[in-house]
Length: 248
Image 1 (tube, rainbow, N blue to C red):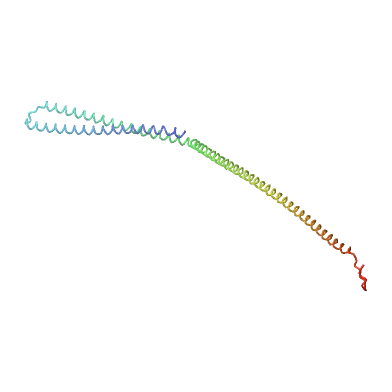
Image 2: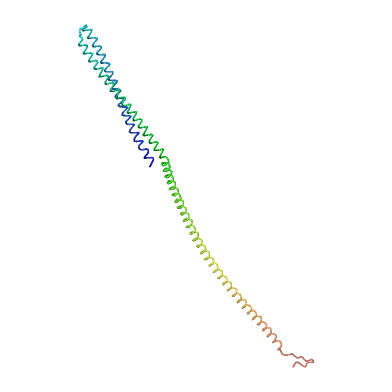
């Protein structure tokens, strides 16, 4: 803010004095050309007057009187006097323009010096203002960077939380599947054990029945043998007599 205020008068003054100098130089150039043109016309007029005077004198053969020559001299002197006055006026105008240009130059130098002095005087203030703005911009950038880092950190935490939640759900599903499989395995093992017990029991019953039948068969055989043996013991005795007595 301080920099823009201190430079604005300088630019404005510089442009103003530049325009003044341009206009002054243009006027000076036009006056110089006009002065040259006027001097050229005066010289041409004097040459024509001399030529006319010479030709007139030669043609008249010195018949012009003193009065005529006096009148011409007066006119020539009047012309010369007017030309001198014009020259003096233009010289004064030129000197006046030079004075004005010098004054404008000095004023411009004075303004520039004052601007430089003002800038030098306010240099510390301007530098402090610049440093303040730089610090503000720096703080703004740091704040924005911290906010961006915090946003990314929150996004990472959210992504990590979702991933952990997904892993937890997968782990629970896996545990449920494993529990279900264990339950099925235990149920199958229980049924297998029950089937094995049934088979063992059936085998035991079969063995007991076989053993019972075997014992019954052995008992029947023994009884049969006893019965057979008992019949043999119960036969009548046969008696034989010697000498033809015959049996009784």
